[in-house]
Length: 205
Image (cartoon, rainbow, N blue to C red; front, side):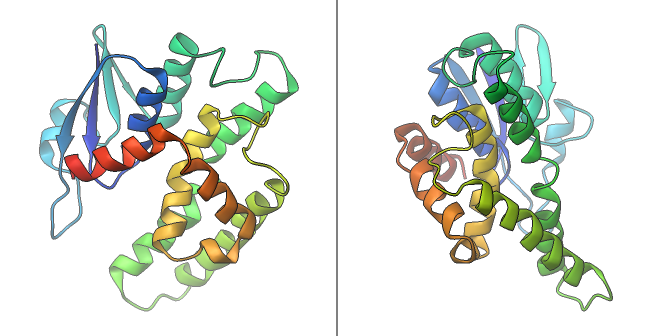
């Protein structure tokens, strides 16, 4: 059985979605952020020294990092369904989008989140975050023109990874800026297992 150490309002919601898509047996151990600091609880450090989520355990292995977890689980349980054929051009695009979610896409949104939570005027950071956000999301919006999904016209792990980015854009009320991303968000939401992950996030909340 796979054990998911799940922190509320974190990247691990997309791992719940992935596990539901894989249709494997799994168990969720929920953790809750501090209501004042919004930080993860110290109990997570007993699972991994960084005390972050998501973390999965399977057969004595502890695996961290959303991208690594997604690659590992799909390669093991659903390489024929949730990833394009290895060696294909689509697979190369898939890998780039899979890791784009936690690199280029995540940084400006995290900076914007931190600036909003801090609430203090900045000399550089707020403006930088806005410019970088529009550049990166403008690129995503352009690449989604005429598409339902990022790669191969089907749901893949890249879409599951990018769902976290879509969530944050929605929370900031920014989806209307990027019409193709807004359509993409609606497409992701049609998947029953996306809907189940949403429900479970509330349940574990």
